[in-house]
Length: 97
Image (cartoon, rainbow, N blue to C red; front, side, top):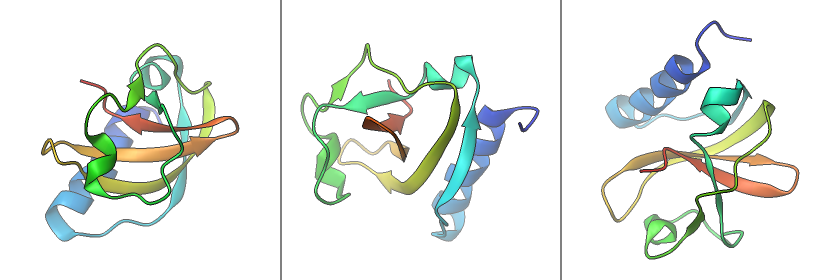
């Protein structure tokens, strides 16, 4: 595990913001970082900014510690840049505000 998985995740988000680049990859979540991801209410068909409009998340549902597959980094209609990841049983986004 990376010594600081949240810092690593933030570097992935920053690279997207600064360079427009993202590569799908695995990230190992610790307990603290897993609690900052929230599950989507529905599995989005496409990752478009509008997926973050309205009541899109279950704020009380989080991924398990361990690997999450980061699928996309996306700026939502609310202007927040989030990472989207998948684990068995759901799709999750970070950060939850």
